Image (cartoon, rainbow, N blue to C red; front, side, top):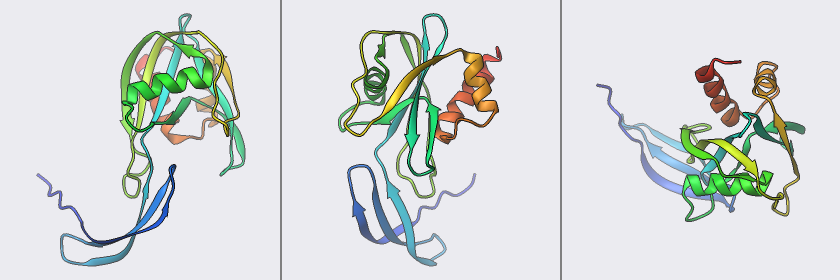
Length: 183
């Protein structure tokens, strides 16, 4: 069995403390005694993603601009967990707010981390089967996105063409299509 020696935090300095991201610099001692004086950690709240399938088997996606890359792309419905929410509660809230879809059977599908070396959060993906439109979008003040319905084949083709850039969304979609093997 391999050792899982944790690093000892000798000192932490917060560089930025914001609701959406906190950056800190840790001074750490490695298990062999070496000191790393500057190890950067990004603290984010946990995120949720939803692979939402309508009653007729189509996929609910959103399209929005992503400023860091300067692109507009199709993505899964997703968002940040609010304090006190369970991942499932957050996923249901985000789907309803961003798309107006709700209902169906929900299954916790997978949880992954963008980068466990320097991110503190997890992205929890849910599979929602049999959702239906029950209302309108209720977007946050800074959100500008549109809801789109695609066949599974269309979403699979987007993945194949490399058009879904968000890795925390592409990974669960690849898993879904691998498990379905129906495309």
